[in-house]
Amino acid sequence: DTGVSQNPRHKITKRGQNVTFRCDPISEHNRLYWYRQTLGQGPEFLTYFQNEAQLEKSRLLSDRFSAERPKGSFSTLEIQRTEQGDSAMYLCASSLGKVSGLFFGSGTQLSVL
Amino acid sequence: KNEVEQSPQNLTAQEGEFITINCSYSVGISALHWLQQHPGGGIVSLFMLSSGKKKHGRLIATINIQEKHSSLHITASHPRDSAVYICAETSNYGGSQGNLIFGKGTKLSVKP
Image (cartoon, rainbow over the protein chains, first blue to last red):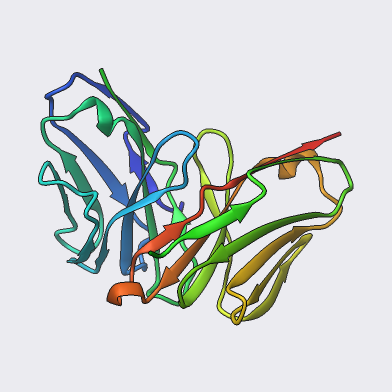
């Protein structure tokens, strides 16, 4: 197992476009988390899944953001009608329930021009 | 409001020095995480603890539940320890089970 994988590593888009990021967690991990991090700040929680169920969403996650984990394995995070304020590093992490540590992917750096 | 505060924000040390990074939180937790983030974004989980002390190599993490305080210590620091160290808590605040609250991180630079 190569750990948590995120694609793409970098994404540059124009304001108003839609973007989709993918996260492949460690295969046996049932929990998957999405975070957003801007320069000089710690990550901020966006949402998490236990298997295919989305159990919690942050108020940071506006209606333009949607996340799915249809088969309880990989997850996608879509941002519609991107805004410049969406520019950030989007991090995915997975864990085996509450008791294991978090394993992070390398992130997707989004730049909205 | 649930907050995680780290200190110091920035820390410069000479190789070989003993380093301490502090983390305070405001509400009851189920677990406290220490994470390491290198330039370019990669985050590695160092420790997850809910009581006492854990040690891994030159790294030691301690937590005092009563004082709502945790420390990360690095013994015999090395330039490769240079990174941002982030404290995060998993709390039951507001019934949340999956929401990690992160500190802003401590940027450590170890000079040779």
